[in-house]
Image (cartoon, rainbow, N blue to C red; front, side, top):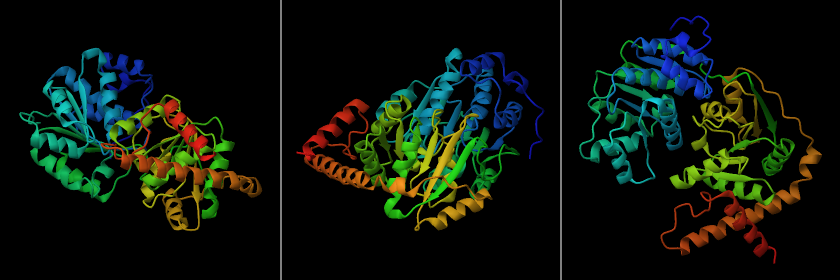
Length: 439
């Protein structure tokens, strides 16, 4: 374990060059975060790094700045590759590299599934400095894109390494590591240190330094965590009650399934909320469209599966609601990490019913504390029952109608919804359905 660094006031104190200090200031980065202060000096000294820190702690800057500084000293194409578990996170990391390297002409490309391979091949042919990729799509290009290899790669980063080492990615990660040069620098960043992350450390890092800016399972102090015991049949009422009490907040509501995400967003819109869904069943274009609508403030509630729980930097999220308690306790920490980012405050509320109490108790065990209960008056909550039930009935009808239209329409998108459109068009179609259903 690395020793704690002396207190640093700015990025110059870490050894970051003046050009990149200016880039940091243009991004609003003045004082380094704890993980940046811990990791950057070792990375600039040429060490492999294992960085452990809670989500939202500035991990991208911790690995991007040393890589760009090394690139300044010896520029070359395909200088670094960053592996990410999700498409949205890959795009976000690529954008961060582009922004930090804007003054030096840095070129970064994101490679992920759900979009055209041929368009990405054109981008690869332009020989960018940085590749940020999901593992499956990177291996597709290494296998099928003529003339493309990473034989000259100088840096490899595995971001959200605990997720990358899940069953979904483990084999393809092994296949990628087999074709990468051994003479490279490797950074491994994760919010949690699992046995598989330790295994990866032994497999692909050379004499790494381990820096830790958090406990194994931790949350930021500025996130106020609460729970509410609710009967399963009244869970929707409690959700609407909380959202109503927290009017004016930008919120993320996490569900367990793609179908729940879709129905719940429709239901909330029926009740007058500006909600939009995002899930793994949506096409990549529609996922990015929904995310952009949320970031732009056209919708202030994002109803999502765990596809949105990792790495996404949406600084303005005030409230996270666990509509469904995650069956994997670690996902709780990633979900609530969407709020209280970069020193801001936030609230996380978990709705716990009789069927998932055991999962919730496991979360409290990892937190090593009991959470306070969200204050609510049952009689006020149940007053919402009739309108909430009617909204759900209409939402289910709208979803069925949309699915029927999709089946009748040749060449329709897989998810058959309007999620990728502007919020105004989405609301217009929702209102049209309301009029028809009330005739």
